Image 1 (cartoon, rainbow, N blue to C red):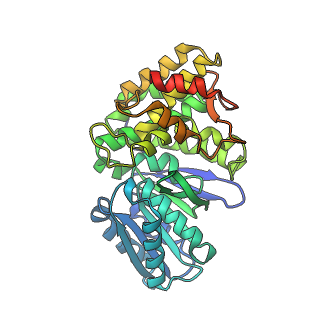
Image 2: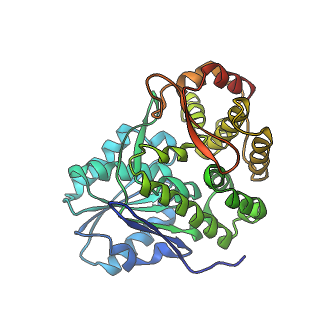
Length: 370
């Protein structure tokens, strides 16, 4: 497949915005600056992304709007930076800039930067604009879309946050060429999620294009991103505050977040999983639990596992994590109601649903086998 012109996805609802997907969209200064209502801009990035793209972004914005006052804050790359302390540092950067209520935060980076930038924008003066500029595949198809922003605390992942839709999203597929292969694979886990939860046809397309996606084919990636964003946008539009259907987007995440929390958000090494990898394992566990409960055929779980393996993603819980400890983490999940586990499971490929009152003994059995 060959690269195509940028694709557009519209997100509707009370605060509509657009997602531009394709090579070179980060260089479209006029389009970027069009979303700045005032003069103050804070560029937020991390130590890996900033050296590659931050100066270019600043130059493009100033070329389109020479009157802009631009500040910046660069945090250390990695999930360990998604903390209340770093949130406070971003707030201080906005204060130092003298950011007014028509200011805009540009979040240039992966999911950590996007979540921090969105949360700070939600809180500064009770809410200023945020433009999401995701540079990882995972952020392009997940965290940059939908307006869920948060930071982690020791008790769990994403427990402190706010709903704050972005003013726009620009997903530049050309930056994926500089993404470490492991991070590209992590993003593909979230792409697979959209097929698994609600689109069997998309999952079949992913099976047909697995090698092209793994090789970083620009057109295949752009199509996968656009399809993923279209699915998420439709769900978010119908359920902006996660009161119902939007919970389906957490397929694999309750298990995955428990794994991430229990391993302590450590910098992913040989054994520690990053977010996308944890979600891959979590989806396999959710499918296995669905089969155990008689909701779905075990063949569907096997099909999902085989696709994830083709995409070089893990499908088993890392050694050394205690099933009882993981279950304790799962009890803190935000979807739980009245002290009962409430999990996103499925009735086969493309048919996810929220199941309440899941017996902890069944969950523990799956964790022990996983």
